[in-house]
Image (cartoon, rainbow, N blue to C red; front, top):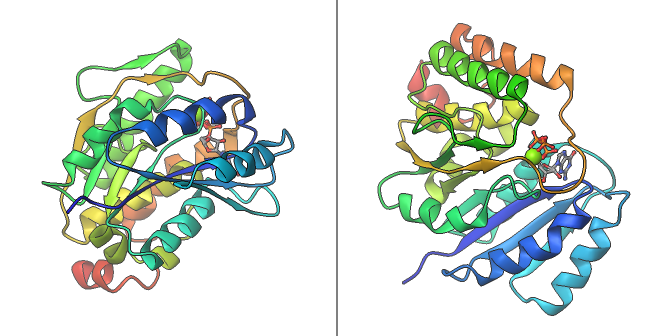
Length: 248
Ligand SMILES: Nc1nc2c(ncn2[C@@H]2O[C@H](COP(=O)(O)OP(=O)(O)OP(=O)(O)O)[C@@H](O)[C@H]2O)c(=O)[nH]1
Ligand SMILES: [Mg+2]
């Protein structure tokens, strides 16, 4: 029996990217379902998503009232995936930075692991069209997160990843308080802390195709602090039974 996989993309002003992206995801082998979480994008991404949903049975959209952030978008979507008994979920940006051609590799990796990370730093650095300053910042941030948290991954902040149902159940979704990049580190840390296996598969990451970047300086700063909180035990582990049992 084939796995039931839900691909999730939070969107905020991705109108110029979504239509083609959805088409490619829905044509990917594996009959993947595709869920977009739109935070009432001013550019009308939500309306476009509704239109796509009307003609594509495997596509749907969750509308939220305003910009509530990437972390909470994933939390809601993953909770829905658990309720609907999906075998795995994939997180993917809606700006073509995460090329859907890697989706089968991410799904395939779950044969050996409960977390499969699409990694930019597995064979050197595979990032295309980033300014040098951003490249250096991301490479340093990753090395930093890896050393401080002790996670065995080259790409600790990757947002392109597949988690099995087992991983989603183990990490205690409702307990996660972090957002943005910190959320992406947090998610991986919880999987590792729960004693589950994570692997990386190489991806080439490209700069967004269209639209505006939404990362902010406070957000980057927070993601520098999160690894220390984990290391020092100051980070909010929440109620996750497996995580706390593992640590105590
Ligand atoms: N629903 C929702 N989606 C968001 C929010 N912030 C960002 N996104 C989406 O999350 C994904 C990643 O955000 P990006 O703006 O691409 O962030 P980034 O990749 O760090 O930066 P750039 O690629 O340079 O823009 C994209 O699909 C965004 O549209 C949000 O508050 N709510
Ligand atoms: Mg992006």
